[in-house]
Image (cartoon, rainbow, N blue to C red; front, side, top):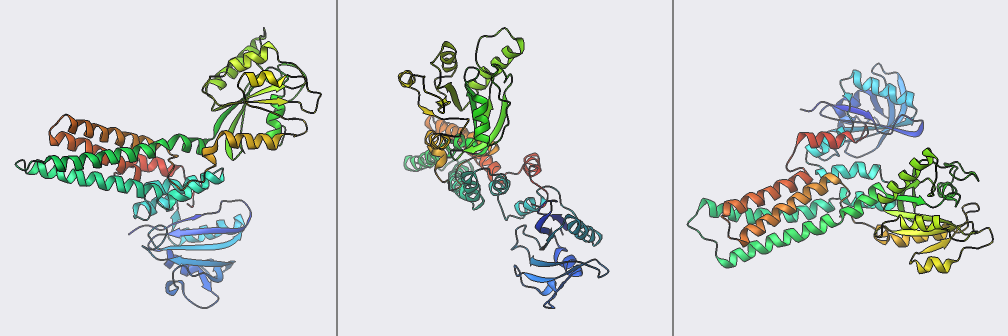
Length: 456
């Protein structure tokens, strides 16, 4: 028996539609006490996933709203339990009143993520699919949404299940050898086992290799905007964001601290960091700003060097360029294209730096800049199918599984006893189980569903 939970699934803001959902043994029974279908059908007799129009009332029959209602019976529902859902008009007052009535009839307030947690506990979703639900809700780009949707369909689970199954087969044979020590594993069988382990290792490596791309897809590219004072760094930030986030003046050193904002540009989430201008200064506060600029550059996944196209390059421009680690992607933005050009672009080309002209003041060249970013991060523009690992928890467990498989391969190579090999294989199986939820740890489960919003 499971208690019945209820929650507003569409938030508390005024909207056209507001949804309240329930899940649990008494969900349909409770819903039937306050819903009268215009067709006359009782919810207890209604077909699953069939929408009904009718009146939603208080327990004493007082009308609250005219709504649509749908029920689904377990185990063939989202949560695996009986569910009922009311689609009301989106008045926060109405939704609150409906919840109050449901609570008076025996339902209780759902906790964050409790609907999806019940789906997981009842075997409707594995843990990867459960985490994909909140990733899909929080997606900031189309690619992140597509990847989360693919994971929700089970793309990662299918791959891991294939690996898991092959390791179980090897484990079963090694168990048999331990149980029946007189039965030796012949050389042909041993080669089959090694091939299975190597295949599992290669599959895990391919899956793990997607994590860097997935992390950028989910969290964005840390992008430092650098240059000497008054080249237009803050103006560029404002132009990209579409509003005045940073103060812009003609006074050098106006920006003394790093300003961070996030936006989708070139199909990629960029975590923009507007930095203090790089120059030698005696001002204590400005010196601290310069130090923070250099720190931001070291941790960047992309550096945008802003140069003043109306002036020739100077030593401070070269210092800005020298501050960028060689392995960090970078592009030079020659600003102020609305002014007469003075800067010699031949020098930029000799430095091996890609560049483009823009005017942060007029917006000229922003579209070309967008295309340039897309060109610099081509892998993030490939539509994912759900096989990209975006979750650090999953990546850690897969990494530990990979290490255990490698240990098993090494152990066989040096003729270690079967029980030692088996220990490594079972460790790998346990790690894979952590990813999908076959190996459940209560602290992990709790932490995962704490991320969710109420009603999902």
